[in-house]
Amino acid sequence: MEVFNNKTDSFAKILCGRTLAYQQQLQISIDVQEHIAKGHSAPCLAVILVGDNPASSVYVAAKQKACAKVGIISNVLRFSQNVSQDELILEILRLNKDFYINGVLIQLPLPQGLDSNSLLEALDPKKDVDGLTPYNLGRLVSNRQNFVPCTPLGCMDLINSIFPDVSGKKAVIFGRSLLIGRPMALLLEQANATVTIVHSMSKDIKEFSKAADIAVAAIGRPGFITADYIKPGAVVIDVGITRVEGKLLGDVHDSVRGVAGWLTPVPGGVGPMTITKLLHNTVKAAQLIFS
Ligand code: NAP
Image (cartoon, rainbow, N blue to C red; front, top):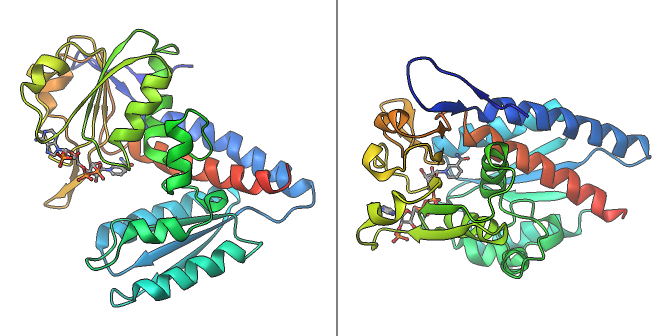
């Protein structure tokens, strides 16, 4: 399946997340229709949005739009930034019991003072479509995947569109967050790649990254990864999104286009795949009730 477009002005081919996301969303729409045709209600996602972080509002609006496109119902539950931890836990417990809600997403980051870990611990793992509860992360660690975090899952599909088999490939992950870096490393390692994670305390990062056939950048530092970090011909996945003067910037510097074999753009790379995997996990949660 070809998911990249040639660009004549640079060496790296653009690995287009929008194209792959579009293809996968067509299949998800069909899955939703089939689910409804069996007499079930449309899959339903509840999103908990706390405070008025403008980036979070934009991401939630994009998720709602994507849900509508494939036939998933989405309900956004908005809370002021003064909401208490206990109120949010009560809401999560209510959603856990609501038969018509198949997936619950807690939009991160939360305002200061709220503890996302204890909220995630309250969430029913069967509705954890973001794959971030301790149960689902534990399943991932033990290679018995249930719900996998959406961004690494989407990155894996992008990587597999170039290397259907990553066995024996060297991969470097920039960043070790629970949301991206760690699950990404597990997915690649379980697919038999040899994985190195680098983080803010790592020394001599280029020594590792210049040997990698696959590089995943998830540090949130615009343009940090320059051409001298990257092996010629490598597949480079730019997860980073930072808004600078109204523009969205990735972690990968423009100079990497002259070295990499394939590179995901920002925007239009990982972002659409993250949303698509949220849709995928929501439909899966709805289907699992009846399997
Ligand atoms: P995070 O929790 O802040 O983690 C950042 C990681 O980068 C940490 O592990 C940190 O190391 C590491 N790091 C920071 N500076 C570094 C440096 N100079 N060299 C090496 N490692 C460094 O961020 P996150 O939630 O993982 O998100 C990362 C980026 O992805 C952000 O830009 C975010 O907006 C973006 N994102 C994109 C999507 C998408 O769909 N495209 C989805 C979610 C997030 P330490 O652990 O040592 O601090």
